[in-house]
Amino acid sequence: SLVFWKHHYVAVIKGNASDPEIAEGMKSLADIVDSRIKIKGRWPEIAHTFRDSPGKITLLRGKYGLQNIYYFTAKDVFRIEEGYAIEKPGLTDIFLHYSDSFTSIRRFSEVAGVLSREKRFSGFTMVGNMAFQMYDIEGNDISIESEHNTLKIRIQKNVITTAELDSN
Image (tube, rainbow, N blue to C red; front, side, top):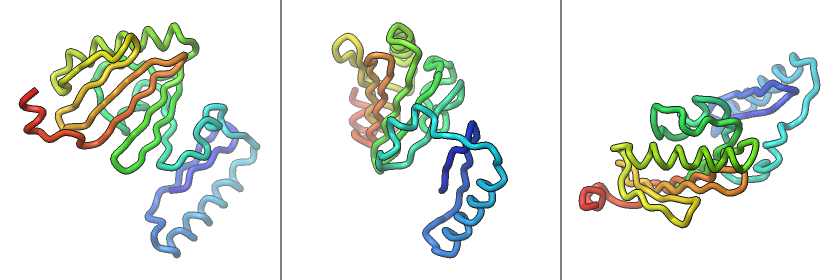
C-alpha cells in the first residue's frame, strides 16, 4: 500500500506490492494522483509522532475510526478526536489523543465502565488508577491506560487459549 498526504487530502493506493510490476504500477498511479492535486500540503501534526515507526500505520478519526482495527463495542465510548494504530505481527498499539488530560481521563472512565460489562471480555483487572487489562473471547490480551491527554491501547494476539478463558 502507498499512503501520502497532500494538503488536507490523504491518498491511499492499495495493491499487492510483492510483485515488482504491480509495485511499479502503484508508484506510477500515486504520481498521477499527486500531480492532479494542485494544492500543497504537509504531514498532519499527529503524523510526526509515528512517522518512523515500524509496522502498518493507520490514522484514526471519528466515531468509526477504530472499527477497522479492532471492534470493542457498538457504543461510541472512545469518542475519537484523533489517533493512530501501529499494527505488527501479533501486536497492535493504538494511541488516541484528546484535547486535554481531563477529557482523556473521562474517556478512560467511561471505556472501563462499558467494557467491564461487555460479555465478550473477561478477566477485567484494574492496574493502578489509570489502567486496566482484560482478555477478549479470542484470547487476545488487551490493556488500556490513560496518560496525559492520550489513551494507550495494546492488543497482544492469542495470548491465552479458549480453554484458559473458560476456566476464568
